[in-house]
Length: 593
Image (cartoon, rainbow, N blue to C red; front, side, top):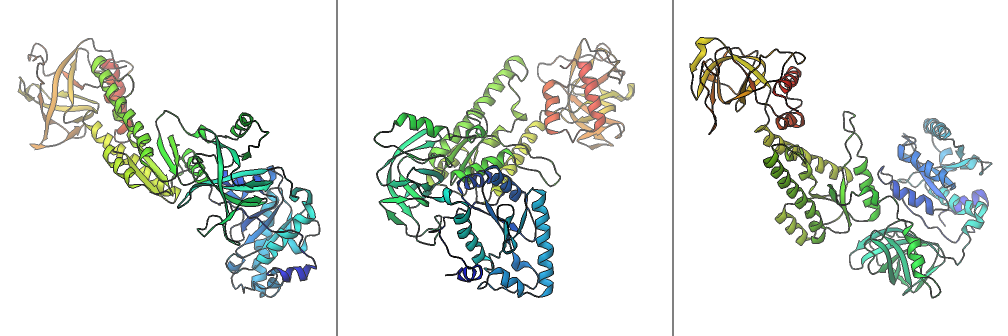
């Protein structure tokens, strides 16, 4: 009835019984959902914003449609945004355009031809539908407005008339079942359900069906077949219509047992009396695509939870390619160790807890190795952010009370959000917090490179422990707590000519630094002469002035492999470029590998 003006204008009638519309999201992460939608459709509607032209997601969708050779119509949307547009939703869009003033017509022509040029760059010929004389060569463009309703009758008119002219064989119904799982979702009062598209064939209650699951093939029985009320979407919460049997093409919600981990996008098969169940199991598992390749099984990574497999696919895609920051630097991919669908349960928290327990065991193992051999064999825990991965990223799902309680008890952080970017931001904040914590821990063990000497023989104020000396810093930065040694070879200040030390006098640890009788935390070459106090740890050998050392001795900080790695990991930007050169010189002097 609403499209009658179009039928009158073009003098035609409908031969199509109805339309089944699948909406795919435009967010750049939802590639899998758009792929799934384009593989199901007979005719697609490609929505292009007249104000912005082709977006990256639009170009991607064009590629999917060209790959599948799917016919499509272009809806040039948001014509109500043209300045001065007067809506006429009761008229065909051709008539509505004729009634606009010259300024609106001029802006429409300008933006329309810009869109035509962009489509031509993608190898597509297109023109407005009422001027299209060759529908097999040129794509139809329908100016539309989802806000005012302009052009909607024209879009429906084309969707109903084109298939009956061009796709008669394709849209003819046949009894061979063609059914695809579109989404798997938990519905309050119904449990876990599958939204499926029946393209051809029939489904009945109590039939045995076989579908592809993340853990293997799922064999179950249809409990009920539900469809939404007429003119309602499947995702809208309204009373459903129950069916004993249903035939395609139609979208159906299936209630059945054990379908929680069914893979969306896979085919659904009915197991009849004469069918081989094992063959059907093998056939459905061929549908298992690359989703599991994105999950690093038994490795370090975050645990991901989503409301549907489509949302899960989108989140996994985003975590694998998180894009760039404001400065254009690419974010690193976030590894995933486990996945789940539906509300975050106690079971999900326990699975994520394995990651946390594994990280704690790894830290203990590393510390035992260091205590035994004096170096980090399996890695330095202070350089690791594995602790940050012990969390759950929950996308558009609630957290059950018992899960929240267990998470607090064992130290698992749960981040919830309805927008992917917010989840990513929350996780990156967690990574920053862990890095800051590790940096504070590393600050106690990280040693800055430093070389210093006693000013002259008058600046030795105490020759025994604690040694009090007046010194000048030659290179690097002297900080509180730095352990220092006296090498048995002369410091040359050049890495190429520096000889390695044969013996080192473990002199002690710098416990105080004063400049002009005022305590300071650090000193460098520009600070000038300073007074320092060096104390020896317990059981350290005390060295005699005049026999083991004198006013011409040179002191260097006791760098080792661990302290250098900590500097690189946590303080790379804090250490001046000249001090890094000093690190190289001290490494050679102290023979650090």
